[in-house]
Length: 240
Image (cartoon, rainbow, N blue to C red; front, side, top):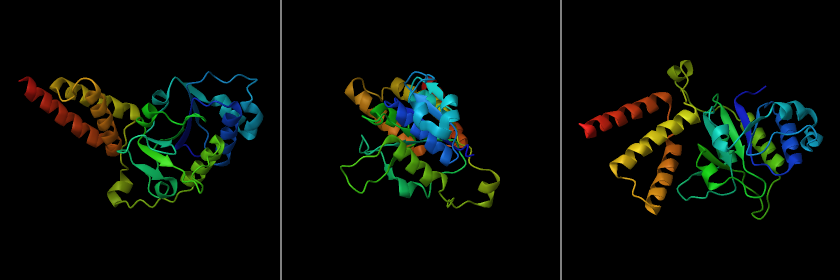
């Protein structure tokens, strides 16, 4: 079984699709399914009709109020979308990402609802945005098909990341997304107190821009501790 990957479905609209996703997960040895924004599945849910061998995954699926809550203990989050909602966000094609993403860390594969996809707010919670490039621009994939393609590409991806002997002995210590968000909130609060974040529309734009920058940084625990130390040093100097 592959414990590195978690599948997260945000506000899925069709019960049969949830069951089909669970069925795909069994094929690739991924067992943890998280459902955000919907009520727990009942025993008579149509999801169980399409799940087949994936029924145990459905019964053990965890439910969360939203995507942010579902990702709290993960270290990477790949949000699958057909397009970026912001020109500053990098959108990776799946074949490119599958050969160079960081392995052996808790990684969530996140899919939005069938009709709307991931919202702008949900996209800002991701560390990576991923596109499954279509052969025909006007076509789209069923939710379970997209999950199957993503799992096939990422579960079977070769580990081509070059590592030094030191890195192999001591792998990079990635913080969880919850810890990362706590640090980001602290930084934004200091920026707010300093007056950098102007009120109104400019404040919203600056916060969004900084969140996108934070996605790219994707700091390790050591880097986060360094940034936190620098931040508190600046706070002490401004208060003295």
